[in-house]
Length: 271
Image 1: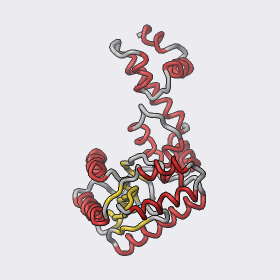
Image 2: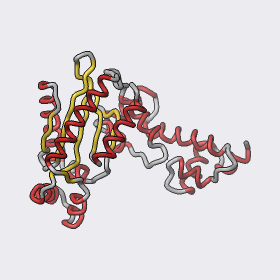
Image 3: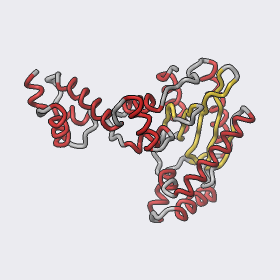
């Protein structure tokens, strides 16, 4: 799999559309994704029944894309425009491109989405309106033009063999996510949501594959990065702390001492 080229392709599409776009493998695990960060789905999915409706809708249209072997565009149960395009290898579907998080540029459609959010969550009307207003709105013509581009993109991935049916285990996909986001705040829920699995499934697979927990691995990688950066006298301890994803220099120093038995400054001086 040519992940760097895939990610550049995804970024280009995201830059054009500002929409949520992801590649999901045949086991429904996210390989790579570009997401605008809108809170609509996060709020809706706090309701178990709503999350189930969304999952059922995705599964239904994924099955349709599988049976028809072509791109399918649809509206989710809560008014969001979405599309699915299958990716083939030797005539077999091995992955899907998912496109979402946009609405038709029609006041009545945005009003429908707002009503869905208010009826299914406990957030205030002002917060709900802010969330809905952040969702990109396009004419129906442009939405279907983007759907056509999604189909062209899936063919490009297939023709250039950018992905294969062996995309790696849940543990390896989690490691890839951690590597790409090490300087950011990382939680177990973040990784599980990115991989389309539960935190329990993620924890069990990771522990079985590597013998340590996910968050132990995150700390291990951060400490290794911190050591490398502290070897350079030109980088301040505060910069090391921020680059390694710690919320404060005090928390970084405490974690470093607990891990290595000495403070970052003491370790630097010992080198």
